[in-house]
Length: 142
Image (cartoon, rainbow, N blue to C red):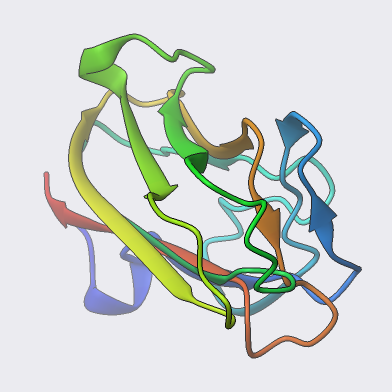
């Protein structure tokens, strides 16, 4: 039996510097909420403690608004997979003269021990203040 206070939930942010288009795992170095400590600020992974349906959402801002950043994206990946069924891509689809926000979310069934991460393919994300680059997740149903 779970109490509401035991429900896995996290809200992580990044204030450790911009992401400048380099492919790789995005590490969110701080949390506002980390119920159960299932999100690691060291590795950047959320690890599901129990089988269930989870909600994940990421929110970011372009690092500069330069018009060169066209079709750049990052992914929400389950178990490090970029297979169509296991990831969600969050794009900036057109050149912009000003900074833009982008966000994406997904509902994902996860087995206990499965991981979720944000993997950058080529996005340029603002990350020097805790207010611009976030992601969160929580157990919806078990």
